[in-house]
Length: 340
Image (cartoon, rainbow, N blue to C red; front, top):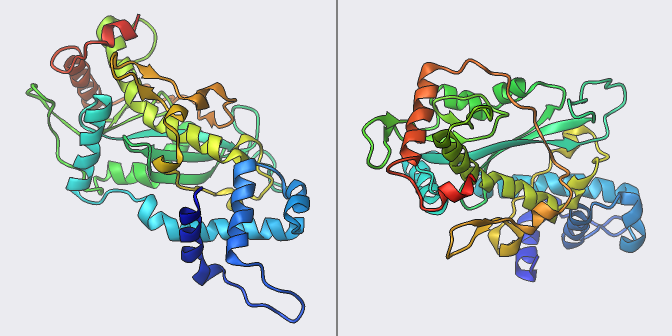
């Protein structure tokens, strides 16, 4: 992080983090509190390991990290993790997905990950997930430029995939049409109006407003093309999670905090992320070059595939229309080679 960005965060945090000196000791300055917190998040080291290099007690480090993370979220969330509220804002996101990832009508890429935690005392199997460890679940919606536009974190890992999504405020708002999303319209060169939709993987059930891949068995070529094009658009949220774990290594192991204190999301900005770190395209062939984060251990585990085997007729019709579009009017020159 450059000095200007650091100083800007200090200025934002000072009103809520500034402490008064006492007769017994001098207060730790806001800048030092922020530096301690960023060191903890970036290295993934324990408070015990950091107390010698920082010359601050492990008890103070733990307290500072929790308090500073809460204040960081409070001051950054309104500007950096903001669900669009107007038709124009949603249209802008859809335009970027079409320009950058060749997927029209897309208003976000959705994914969920398990964040490993050390369970609180007497919690039994409440946080024990299907992967065999204790966790809470982070759901995130990202735009085409690798920015979080919605997060939901805190559901215990034992909850089924369908339960996690059903409890999510975004799912409920989409079901009730409360997000001011643009009305359905035709894909370029087509005649059937289709809804604007989120792209996701098999962990989520098919909806008219949520596209997931076709089942991998008995795929014909058009369906393979659809799955490829959807996977290409989904790379946005995969990269957001990859950058999160790469930059904040605290997510690479169990976080030794109570679940309520593990809810830490820090917005990552492109100015802070080298091009080689994330997936990007070869300008000549349009093939996607995998980012370097994919070469590292994948510490954030995916949620289970959805067991919803009975999508609505409308949801299947919308997916078929996208499939037809990607194999006709919306075809790109390299897609046939990409599925071989």
